[in-house]
Image 1 (cartoon, rainbow, N blue to C red):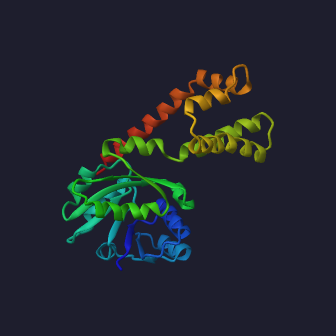
Image 2: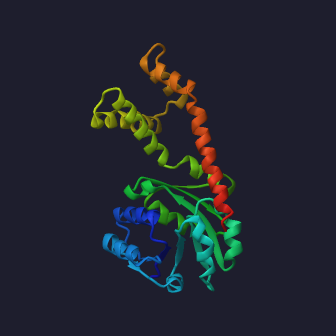
Image 3: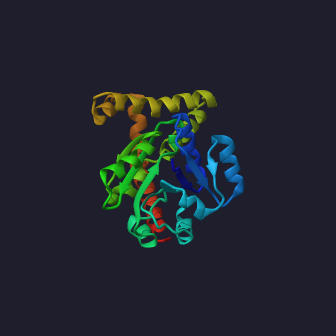
Length: 263
């Protein structure tokens, strides 16, 4: 059985391999990276096969995953040659399929994926988009791999960057850190502040996902007029909370567009 080959042994590959190990995924995986120390660490942590030669790694692949930074994609593609029909999935944020295809066209079938780092614990969400000409069977093969580490959502490419900027777990971690710090400044110790902040974010969202009440109704229910929650929400909105979030998302989109110009 030919392996799934990851070109790049950095953070997202590490998180993905952790999720696959948790899911008891036993099909062959091969990782290439130009840094031998990363390959040694991945072998030690996950028991995966490694290959220090880029072209030899490519030639072994049944499915090829491009898992390098956007500013390294162009150089990487210039160094490889693919002569057989092969599905290649790019994890490079902001780099559109038409540019990938221009660098490495037929017989390659291109897809883009953005797995959340939360895939490390099996609770990820992966956005996928496919080039024209993908058969249902080829799509299914890609989806099955990413479904091992969480949910999968196919997104039209014109929405892909907006989705991946919005779905990043960085929003949750950032909000958790900010809310817990605010609680500490009110007098809570660190442990209790984190417990309170985690409940405010994670448990409330879980109740929305598992329930049937519309989000607007839950917001109104939680923020009783004249209560502390209502006062807190009004103050954060007055301080530009929603505008700040939108500004952050637009900055992420701008970064994605810059990434697309790197190739």
